[in-house]
Amino acid sequence: MEKRVFSENEVVFREGDLGRSFYRIESGIAGVYLCYGEKDQRKLTEMKPGQYFGEMAIIEARPRSTTIVAEKELHVLEIQENELNKFFHGGTGNDPGPHETVERKNPYTDRGI
Image 1 (spheres, helix red, strand yellow):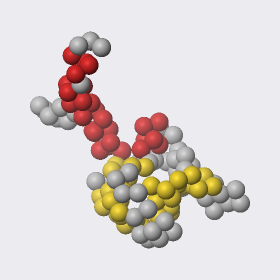
Image 2: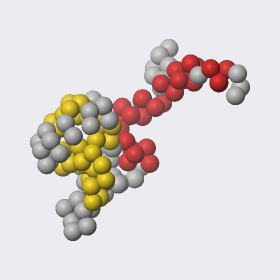
Image 3: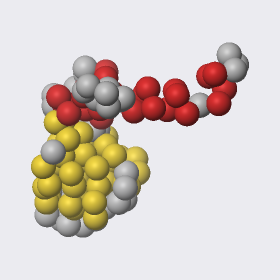
Image 4: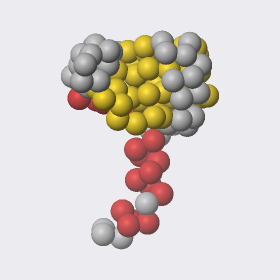
């Protein structure tokens, strides 16, 4: 994981790029665009601190579906593909992964519901 800073109006990644990491916003605002920089550019939404973006390109193994632009100075935590896989596929040794922890704490799972 690496902390990164993007200046106002700087592109984080572009629609069509290959995705090898995803991001958690620490501070700032990220704009989510289709057709960024083209005549038919469309802003879909803004993302704020605590939100994530970029994970779907890794999960679906497809190119990025949108362009992300720093609307204001943007501080993010970049999480690489191999770290995402580790997160979803569990920890090491006796440390259960998040999916195992959630399942174990779910009262409906133990009752067969």
